[in-house]
Image (cartoon, rainbow, N blue to C red; front, side):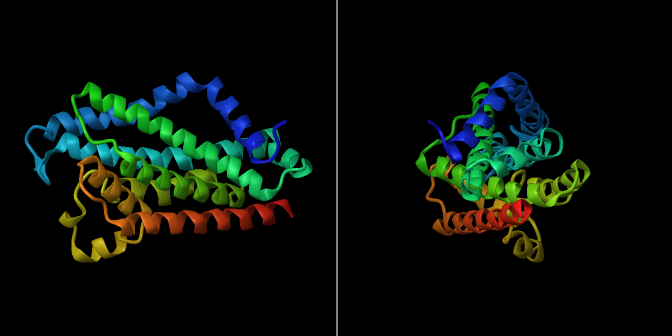
Length: 245
């Protein structure tokens, strides 16, 4: 019999399965537009770090999409809280807060991994071949863990969907465009690089791209993502404890 985190995770998987086709379609639209608009427009003319812009773009899209889709679990939690009152049912159930957070974080990470697979398939259709080695997937795993944990904590703090949309606009969207996804970080001024050094997507993009190019990623990026993920996870636990009280 399932109990604890597996029950929470299984519930999210059932919801995911019911709308899988629509979700995959939505996950495909933005990467496809970026590949067509940026990849074809600049892919053959621009060379970055010894690679075409299309090859440079795919790892950036992987980092960005794994971030946005992992964070999107916050919207699912909010729907369950505001309309279905599922959170109140979890409060009454013999499920610990740690188990609840673990299940929701894993659900967010599953969405992120699914979006990555979609992008890699699109990349193959565009003729892009990269190295999808264990370090590549480890960086994606850690990036998804960071933003899924952040999403669970933020979902406990917001009071409406408008608040959730504001968080996405002011936190996720700027990172998506400034975290080294579409252009090399060294093209920015030093002061901007110093600021963006502290956002997790910068390190995720760097590690994912290095691994995809068959290079040795900086171990510091992995350590920083792991520390941030654990920090956000325990912040989420504190937020759930307060929400439950």
